[in-house]
Image 1 (cartoon, rainbow, N blue to C red):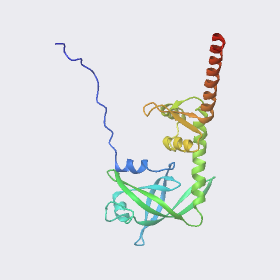
Image 2: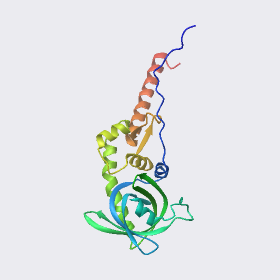
Image 3: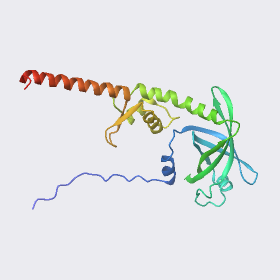
Image 4: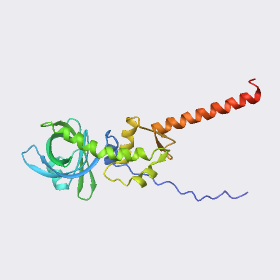
Amino acid sequence: MPEPMKTNTVPEEKKTISLYDIYEEKREYPRISLNAIASLSLPDGFDVSIIVHDMSPDGIQLRCNRKTAHMIHPSGQFITEATAPGLDIRFNLNVDNSEREILAHIKLFYFTIISEDTVAFGARFIRFDKFTDRHVDRFITNAMSPVEEKVLDMLDLPRSEQYIVERLGESAVNLDDTLNMLKKKKAIISCGDDKKQKYIRMESALQSMFKRIERLEKRLAELETKTGGN
């Protein structure tokens, strides 16, 4: 009896999904890296310093050490909608070369430990004071627009994420968020399966489709001529 064929197949490494990954993947809007120092007002009247790691139109991710995290969320229990603490936060944004103070009321919706002494809190914006939400919107628009334009410029043909990353060289904006936003705007479309996903500008995709139709119609006309229209 012949021996079974040996293969060099290596089992795929399983990806570990953390609580942080699950919540971050659910965020609908693009996240802009910020790493700005903020002041967080606690219910007991104390203020603590914390880092605004990134921001989107609907929320922010905060980071701090374990000691500060215990002050913010003393129970350490899983945060639910009913138990989510509401807090006031203030921090500065550079908008159009001017420092703008952001005053907002936020509500925590998760926390997770991401390193030995680093805790991440996810928070939603509940309301803004003194109409400072306009500064947040402007800041995000300014950060996103140049990157979106760069991505669109290279999508005259179907391109992979790896291709885009290699030529983009941008670290301030998450590429997945940028691509998702462009798809929502119907500026680009995706093609291929999950492993070979590619993206192309909508205008270029339509032009390519029309060219294919023209070639097909031309080929059909040639065939009809050869067969005498029968």
